[in-house]
Image 1 (cartoon, rainbow, N blue to C red):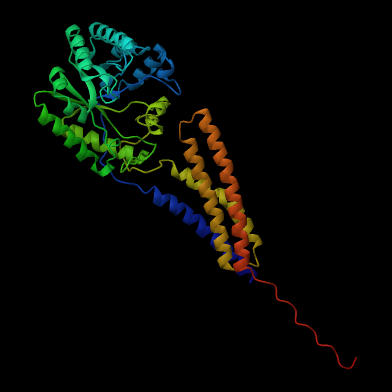
Image 2 (image 1 turned 60 degrees about the vertical axis):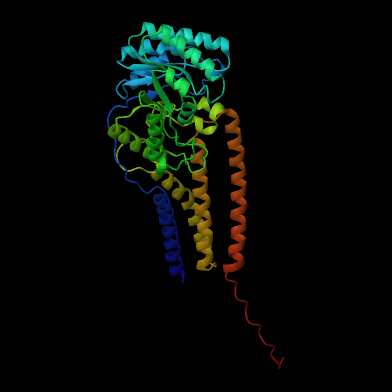
Length: 418
C-alpha cells in the first residue's frame, strides 16, 4: 500500500503538471496566417514617450524625435503627423535626414486661437521642407463637432492658397459621405477606416474596409483616396464583436498589408508606437494601437505562426513550478486521503497557481498610472486572500468527502470468570 501511494501521488503530480502545460498550449495554439515582409507605405507617428502627454503641456524633444525616425527609416517610406506645434514641427526636417517622406498635420479643435497657430505653422512647414508630400488640416475635427463644416472649409481653403502640396482633412468614412461640399474642396480624401471602433469582428474586417473604401470611390470618383488611419489595438476593452489582443493585431496587420499590396491601397497604419497618454482620450484601448510598444520593441511577428501570448512557455513553466512544491507536500502528507480527494485538492492548488501567474501577466503587461498600480496592488492582495480562503475551504471539503477514517478497535468482551 505504501508503494502504491507513492506511485499514485507521483502520477497525480505528473498528470496535473502536464494538464496545466496542455491548457497553456491549447489557449496559445498557433494560427497560420499569410506572412508579410517589406516596408510600410505609411505610419502615423506621435513622438511622445511613456506618460508624456501633449494635452498636459509635454513638448517633443529633438533628440527623441531623431532617435525615433532613425529607428523607423528602414521600416516605412512615409510618416504622418497630427500637429504642427509642441515640438512636432521639427519632424519634417529630421525626417529628411533619414530619407522619410511626411504627411504633415495641424491639430484643429474648438480652441480657435490655437487653431490659427497650428495653421500658420503647417503652412510654414509645407513651404520649407521638400519632403512634405501632403498636408492635413485637422484630424476627426468634424466627428468631434469641434468646428462646423463651414469653418473647416475656410481652414482648408486658406491652407490651399498658401501651399503647393495636396491639402485635405482626415475624417472617418461616414463623415466624408455626409459632407460632399468638403469633399469637393479638398485635393484628396483622407479617410479613417477602423473596424475596431465600428464593433466589427476580426474575420469581417477586411471586407468592411474594402466596402467603405468602395463607397467613397463611388461617391467621389475623381478623388484620390488615402486611408490615413487603419489598424487594430493589442489590448483594451471589447467593443461589440471587436476583440483587442496581440494575436488579433498580428492577424489584422498581416491581412491588411497583403490586401493593400494586392489592391494598391494608399495607407498610413495606426500607428508606429504605443501612446499610453491616449488612455485619457480613448480609454484603455487608446494606449495599444502601436506596431511597436512604448519602448520601441516590435509587438507582433509578421511571419510564422500567430499565438495569443508569444512568451506563454515561460508563463506555463512558472505556473507549473509554482504549484509543484505545495502539490508535492500535500500529496506526500495525505496518506489517509482517498485518490479522489488528492486529485481534487491538487487540482485546486494548480488552478490557484495558474490564476495567479495569469493575473500577474495581465497586470505587468499594461501601461499603468500610479493610481492604477495602487488599484492592481489592492486587487492582488484581495486575490491572495480569496485564493487562501479557497484553498482552506477546498481542503476541508476534501477531508469531508475523501478522508479515510481510522478504524476503531473492537471492544474486548469481559471474562465472566473474573
